[in-house]
Amino acid sequence: MPIPLENGDGGPPCWVLLVAIVALLIALLLLWAYQRYIASKKAVHHLCDYCGHMVTAVSDCHHAMVRERFLHGVCLECKKECKLVCARCKRPL
Image 1 (cartoon, rainbow, N blue to C red):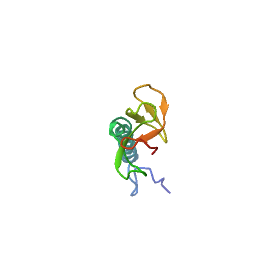
Image 2 (cartoon, rainbow, N blue to C red):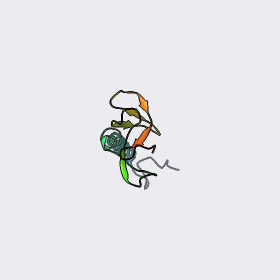
Image 3 (cartoon, one colour):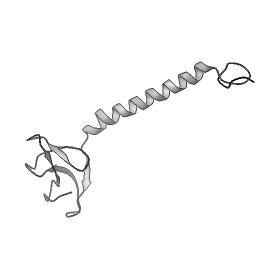
C-alpha cells in the first residue's frame, strides 16, 4: 500500500505539495506585510455617536492626530497614550 505523498500510483509528487505550501506561506506573508505597513497608514474613519458624521479620531489631550491602537491611541504631538475623540465635536468616540 503506497503512501499518498509518494510519486507513484495516482498521488501527486511531494515537491508539488511543497511548492503549494510555500506559495501559500508567501501569500500570507505578503498580506500580513500589506496590513501592517501600508493599510495601517491610511486614516481610519469612525462614526461619531454624538454628531453623526464620519470623522477621523484626534487625541483628547492636544486634539492632534493620533496613531490608533485598539480602543486607544498615541498622540502624535506629545507621544503619550490618549483617548480617541471626534475631530468635529471633540466628544469621545
